[in-house]
Image (cartoon, rainbow over all chains, first blue to last red; front, side, top):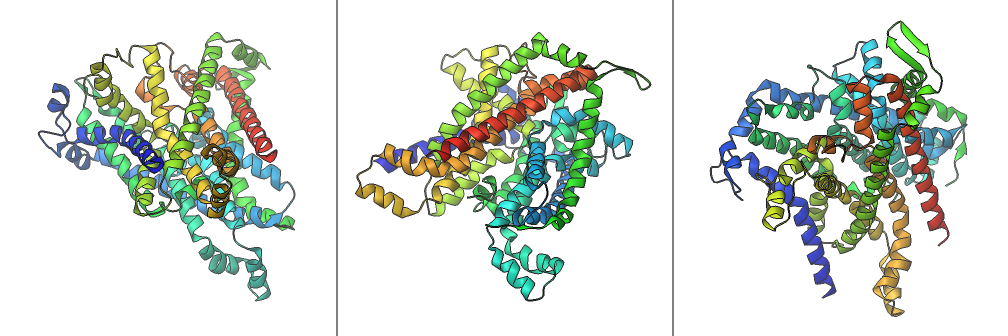
Length: 267
Length: 288
């Protein structure tokens, strides 16, 4: 009885979660004519034309490529700088460590809207405006603190005796770190990479403002389906579906660790 | 764990410090610089001191945007936290369904912010969206584009749809870390379901809830893309939250001075509240 009630609540919630997504998917397979002529729960005139529009028009698919490029750059940069820093925070006490850690976190709390204009000026002045690296660096603002935070949680779970034994065995720090320590926390690194991917992928405000043509992300291109003849609902829905797919794929790989990542490695 | 005192560790954090300094301190200093000057052109600016801060603090529209933001953020917390705990307690603990549930739950979190707006924009329309159509069919006069209350509720429901999973996942991880013997002991003592929740589950959840509440408060306070796409801040100003207000001021009207002063106040509010939540919750869980 009690278990049955739990099952019902959970099912209802998941249903509510999936309903808007189902509607988007449903719409992406319809023609605009069918969309506007009334509600149908399954596409009566099943079409892939909307997807074809996106995948054959370079103005559309270049958006996906741009997004992938800066997301990948951001993930690599964030992980590279965050790994040694997280090790330092999890293993050593040093002058100003607590203040530094809190200062890093305040950057995660900073509203991107605050940094909008200065970023445009900053990246223009170093000739990086409208490049992938500019967006990647801008997203480091929130991804680096988050990476340090998550990795520190995972690293603190590794017993310190392992470090000490390795140093006694004659390892020096760089070799120990790369060949012994990093393989031990590869789950943590995977989860961190996932989070960098996620937050960089879903962010729009900075990515849109820092780019005009060459590095424009898909999320910004989507706003252009509004034309004189109204909104092209079918293509808009198809583009939306295509932005969800990469996320759905990466979730599958980290599904067992995702909760631990959200708890910043601290559960 | 005892940590070794070693100031050489600074070399390890140096890359992070340099990178974040580049992408945070320089822009923040620029904002501070703007906030104390009246800028007419590249070579034409006057130092105005705290004038913009006074101006911004007395601005009526800003007061109402701030009030809307607080009501919104607290509504978000009031709905998402209890709902998240309930759903997490309903999750299966083992079996094949665990993976399926986890993936389905995480799905909304991976949708780009503006696509979330698009999904609900479509879903809520009375002519082509299932949600809006169903509500109207049930006799509710629902139109998020014209009715301020409807628009506000739609943004709230959208946020609940988007982010409750975060709380669920956190609480689920917290619940899994409770050893089975605790429940057995409770059963022997004949504890009620409420007592089990209050004295076994809630204390374990408090550490993850700190993170959950902090993240949800910070992020709902910075919400931008979702209402922007859904309603464009309207009808009227019903769903214009702080980020959008700021963006209009800085990029739309190019009022650099007030925008910068406002940015700093905005940032400080977030810092203050995050700190308050953090101390309140750690204090609460420490007194258990």
